[in-house]
Amino acid sequence: MSKASARLAWFVAGLLILLAALEIFERRHSAIIVAASHRGLTKVAMLELHPRVDVVFLGTSRTQDGVSPDLVTRALQSVAPELGEVPGFNAAFTGSSLGALISLVPRLDDRRDIRVAVIELSDPQIFNEPAPWDDTPRATVTLEDRLADAVQRVHVIRYRKALLAGNLGRLPSLFIGASLGGWETKGTEQAASWLGHRESRATGFDPALWKPAIVAPGSAPSAPEPIDPTLAEVAAQLGSLARRFENRGVKAVFTVPPLSASVRDMPERQGLRALFAEVARRSGCEVWDFAALTLPDAYFRDVSHLNREGRAQYSEALAHELVRLLKPS
Image (cartoon, rainbow, N blue to C red; front, side, top):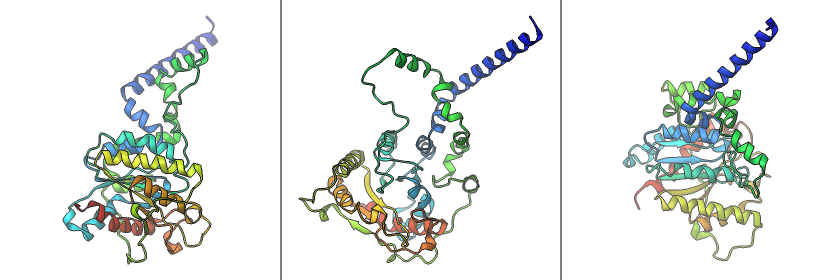
């Protein structure tokens, strides 16, 4: 055998050994690999590391960036100390959709400690897209489908997305998730939370400024005006989601995240108002509309995402509203 052929043979053998070792590693640590393959699955895995979660926040990056569970807990201790400690977790993630939300919620069924689910109701959240970790049923099964299914049994191939640089960056949060509230998206924020550093509470919080427009189930007309069929389907699915929580003894509430006062043409302030009433009617749950408020631009890093101080203010406002749901009936 020539030297070139020998080098090629050694290279191929080394590559096969490396792939075999990676396959064995992924099979032994499949839970971590699967969790790292998508933002939503990462959040579920992080939540599982928390011994107790009373309040879970679900939604898109507007909720992920805008709600600090630790600040909510501390605000609740100030507003209603009789409730004791009420720990929470922010399970929202960038790019969430209605399809992803519906697929994610059943993964929380084993958590019997959750008392309240705060679900974001916004334009990006309601798009009904299939969750990327769910298999789409096939109408017919071809030979190519069978070959694809066979290949998917190889973990290196099936969970290849977990090996992307962006997904590998989630691995640290899966090991220190018990110290994180779920809002931390930067490494510096995660490190600070892991080391026990806590964010400052809201400066000069004004409850009147942050009082949302509340759409109650009883305020929705029994014979509502017709709405777009797509939005009607959204309301039906969110209603089913709320009933799923109710059947587990979890109180659900829908919240429309705040928007900057400098923009008025956002769907939450115009085309979706009828949807809020329909969601309240079908779910039997309140809708807290914070988008109806006129809030200073200083609380926002862009028109729909809160900055650090805005997160502190919004977390405080949510605590004031949560008291009604957490107090015994």
